[in-house]
Amino acid sequence: MTVLVLGSGGREHAIALAISRDPQVRDLHVAPGNPGTASFATNHPVALTDPDAVVALAQQVGADLVVVGPEAPLVAGVADAVRAAGIDCFGPGAQAARLEGSKAFAKEVMAAAGVPTADAVNCVDLDEVEVALTRFGAPHVVKDDGLAAGKGVVVTSDRKAAVEHARRCLEAGHPVVIEDYLKGSEVSLFAICDGTRALPLQPAQDFKRVGNGGTGPNTGGMGAYTPLPWAPTDLVEQVSREVIAPTLAEMNRRDTPFQGLLYVGLALTAEGPKVVEFNVRFGDPETEPLLSLLTTPLAQVMRAAARGDLSQFGEGLEFRTGFAVGVVLASEGYPGTPETGRPITGAESPDGGPDPDVIHAGTALDPEGRLVSAGGRVLVALGHGETLTGARQAAYTRLSRIELPGGFHRDDIALTAAEEEAFTAMSEPTSPSPSDPAQSE
Ligand code: GLY
Image 1 (tube, rainbow, N blue to C red):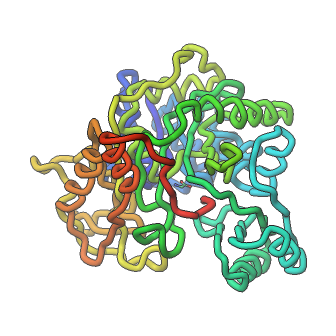
Image 2: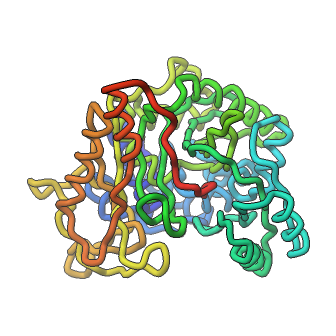
């Protein structure tokens, strides 16, 4: 197979790395990619949201399969255009991508499918916003209806801040969704879907707030780990039955079948798992630790999904035993305006080659060919272990060898769960691990 992966972040580096391990993959291309993907694939410039440009590139490289990483090209109809050109494409068409592109649409689908989620109100002016904020009370959850590059969701007990966020969304011409706050640990559960069938991955948890202890503003995610030792053993089965299957059925009923990666963001509430949000692509940074453990050949699964028949993978996806932890190294200033162009050292393996435990996100090469920072989230250091404590230690040890002036990271990725693991080894199991109160995005 010749495969073209679209995107340039840590998610796409992790996807491309997993695809490169598939024995059926002969030729791998990434567009635009990053210095990490350039170490084992061929990078190409492309305008990601231009369907014609993507189709032209896919034809030029002779792609048998195109994998769309980020949401914006999916919402722009890139997957539809690639399929119309006769090339298999992993990713939903524009209509199905509205599950992420419009929060109000996702709520409508969930209501029709009977999927458990927070009560919500779609507001088109500030009067409606005020009524909804009073109805649900604090903490307030205010969501931009449209794509907002990770800046669309505000969770706050400060009513003025909630109204201010709603005002900014409305002034930009977007409705806002105000919803009830879901109390409970947050879990990310991904499923590879072929339109009717779904293959769930193992659950993961990410850490959305910028600061230790879940403090500070929301980010794209500062770290993640998988699997979750504290998650109920029937969680995947329950979410498959109560969320994923009815959602796929409802999308089929609308003649917009969902094919690609369905990201189910959940809160484990006292009444059971409820959906916080849907996304239509792999999560970042959950994908980095998740795919590092996947042993099922990824390109073959994605091609089967793209062709609408995952039946040959009826046994489900397989993962290496043990745990994986990913810790994000961020640029000074993130999640505000990040400082970029700063030198990064220590990202390569001891022999000077690429290190599969260092996933590039916002990196670039300067004119002299040196690795520099080029975004807010710069890279993800991965660690693996038979225990969560071991995996954490490995990730933080790897990160400690990397230098970026002004760079910072959270110290507590997977910490509570690792402490519970250590405690449980000596005594009885404890309660679920707390998560950042992010209500996602
Ligand atoms: N980790 C959150 C997201 O990818 O949306």
